Image 1 (spheres, rainbow, N blue to C red):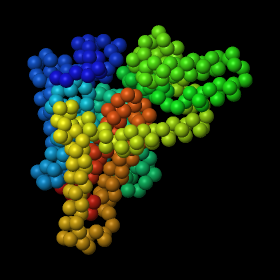
Image 2: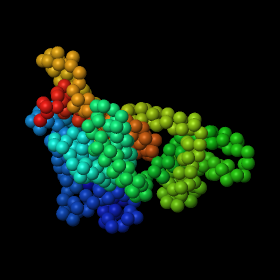
Image 3: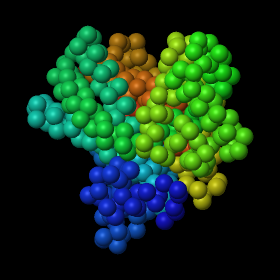
Image 4: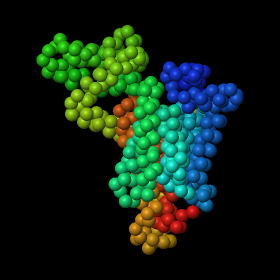
Length: 418
């Protein structure tokens, strides 16, 4: 098993699952506890969890008659080159089962909106609760993605024609996820690393000159706001001069505001973040621009996030494997498109079926929300930016795969579905 700085917190939580003050969500520590009690090798367990989740993805989300099609096998191989190898390396991090959890969220969403038989109200509630629990019990930030999907689907279902038949499950998902989010908000905030990320963002952004200019604009230099801004400037300058702008390694006694590991300073850090980025309209615009810049430049639109999925020991796949997987997906889709056009060229002149429209709306919501989720994570991400943005990128891959395995549904009528 490979250990990282965060690994020891997960192990400590696994040893004290009943301790509600633990700083980590429960799902991964529970897995560690079970594998430890049964004397199982965590890397192998996570590897089979990934395989089983992918198999269930094809079974529940795609045509079962084409379960072993070349496309499904190709997608399976492509994904086994992504997160499964990471877990096979035995890293003691949530990423070892992250993709499996996200796959199950997509599976439950598919079962909710594309059931093979009519879904009862109880089933809709059960699926929605499962989605919400999976979202908060591994990485609480995933709940932001789930909320975004539920809001968009609810709006489209109630004001659009193509998704009108999904009004009831959309409303159930919206109510349940909003309820879970509100009920678990304190829990999510206690398990997140938002304080460290805020401190790192302030320390590494070019806000010193702007804060100094705002300090000169304050009429009363002895006011509480002026003193607080001065303390923020002092901390940023100290971190830049002595600690390479990293608040996580600086001794807390040397800092006045950006004490990222002191729970008593959570509200203070939030206040500093609000002053720096939310008091003026241009600050909000600058924050949005910073988010886009970090997503495009630092993560290369999420491609660099996939590097971590290839495991720390398989160097030949570390970088080339990412581009291989992407090219494989693109070539597969182009090959299918050309072959289908040659075989049934007139069919492409037809309009989309009702099922096809719903499929495109569903995948569009998953992709659209995942992009905004990535932008959100790009701002909140600290030192490990690629690892922070990775959940959004994996959701994008799951959405694209969902469209590929159901591509035959686009031109089919409902009575042709199996």
